[in-house]
Amino acid sequence: MNLNQKIKECLAICPQTKEFIIGKNAFDKIPEVLAERYEGNKNVLIIGDSITMQIAGDRISDICKKAGFNVDAYIFVKTDKEDWDYIHEIQAAIEKNSSIPVIVGAGYLNDIVKVAAFEAKTKYVCIPTVASVDGYCSSGAAIKTNGSKNTYNCWAPYVVVAEPEVLAGAPKFLTAAGYGDLAAKVPAGAEWMIADLFGTEPIHEAAWNCFFDILPELLGNPKGVAEGDGEAVQNIFAGLALSGISMQVCNDTRPASCAEHLFSHVLDMTHHTFNGRPQLHGDQVSIGTLTMCAVFDEILKYDFTKIDVDKCVAAWPSLEEVQKDAIDTYADFPIKNLGYEMMTRKYESADKVRKELENLKVVWPEFKKKLEAQLWSFDKMKEHFDLCGAPTDPSRIGITRAYLKHILPKAAQMRWRINAFDLLKRCGIYEEVVEKIFGKGGAWDLAEEKLK
Ligand SMILES: [Zn+2]
Picture 1 (cartoon, rainbow, N blue to C red):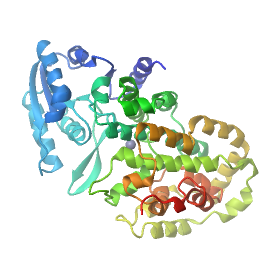
Picture 2: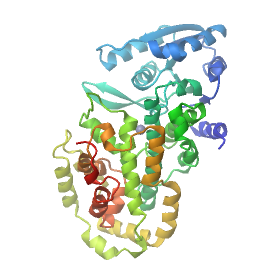
Picture 3: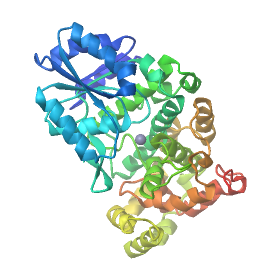
Picture 4: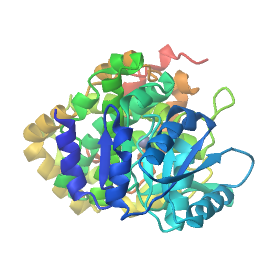
């Protein structure tokens, strides 16, 4: 794997992120990049909190000052202010001297600055301090408006500069969560292949090539991730960032997530907490990822060249039946019509389903090989999660296996896009597969419940 070559190829087709430098002493290159990318602007505003300034912000400040930049700092302190109050405050700080915003940090702060820079109509520089999530290079931020969190569309970072030593110095549990968020792309990619097969969302070749071909290598050293090995952690961050760039390339979230992320969304939207705290995105996604690996393990056991298409089509529900099921599934959910709306949008006629199944029957041997090349078994994924410290049982995020089974239909119906469950439903084996996963000897055997 030649990571730098891959990054170079991705940046060449990326609409918003134009520089991504990762490696030892990468911060030393910041002045040169700023000079080239910001047309002589000499004013830099470094935005961080007391911890991230200590980890990297102060050093970057010195590097920029030595190179002749005027450096100001905005030290973020979390109080009880609303998201938009921070955004406007940071926006004003950026606009004061028309400074180049350099955000040093992750998560919440990164999201706030992303929006503040966008509001100030300025492109920003991202200095990540933790390889914990896949959102760094996406063109959106999670912002609370009037009490509810929504994705706010804004620009992705213009420049990203990361040092492996800084990323590897982050708390291990955060990097493990990042590993899970990157591993999610394994089943998510396979689900994209299904959507491609059904013709609803064809694979965007350039976006796919941003990282799917090197994904196994990026995930290849889970033990190194747990030990804080610079290269192992660098690979996790690179993968997360490239998945964001991939999303920019096809202007869609399809490359980075599918059903495995929806389990996490169900938990977020029901305000799930464990030990009094919301759980990390990557940890929740890890459980969704393992679940989807288990689903695919079952899918790969079937021989779809033998499906009885007539029988499947005859059993295909009407739109009204699908809508009723969605209303029942979402009866105990905060947004009761979500499943109804998504399934209405997703619904396909029996004729279309017949064509999809007839095609599946013919191409299955070849398609199965492609799926196998993309997928990891539940056992393999679990082994890797064990090594890096990511969750390997729902109990780690405070949910029982029974609850996971309860929310599975919600995850299956939460988005309009085709996922692995839609394949199962078309073939009339959805219930059967779910029962296998939660049944005796299954991946999440209910008899082996760890959280009582
Ligand atoms: Zn994610």
